[in-house]
Length: 186
Image 1: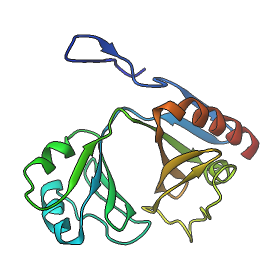
Image 2 (image 1 turned 45 degrees about the horizontal axis):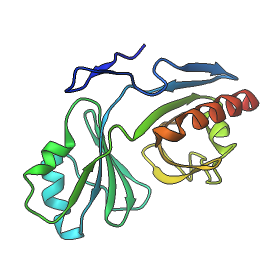
Image 3 (image 1 turned 90 degrees about the vertical axis):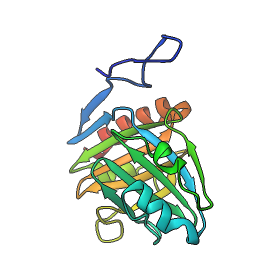
Image 4 (image 1 turned 30 degrees about the vertical axis):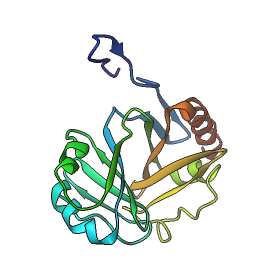
């Protein structure tokens, strides 16, 4: 079970859906631990400076990602990335960059799920209209898309594994959708 984080006021904060996990039809669905996230916007001229500060090359091609250790940057648009870090603080790393950019902390806005197993692709395709075959959506591919009625950010982390990011206000819906879809995929 995920640990509750203490806020500055000393109030314990439990991560959304902490400890929920499901195994159905050969698909494992897990709520991932909290991570630091930033929504990063920047023009092309600022990419090199930001890449240096973040310790990875920000991807510049559609549907690509880049990782260095526990940090991953997902290309969401020509001037937009979602940066996820399991241990560091990408917002602090961008603070000293003088090049034009906007970095906004969105860590508490999102909840992430891991969907893995032989039926992971079919589970996601139950509500995502995108071609998620390995040929069309290889390991490292990412996209802002929909799942059912919700906008998500999807990252393929392995041949049969995906990371699904959604807003925490939709996390119950996404979890229930994925559990049902996994049962159908099996």
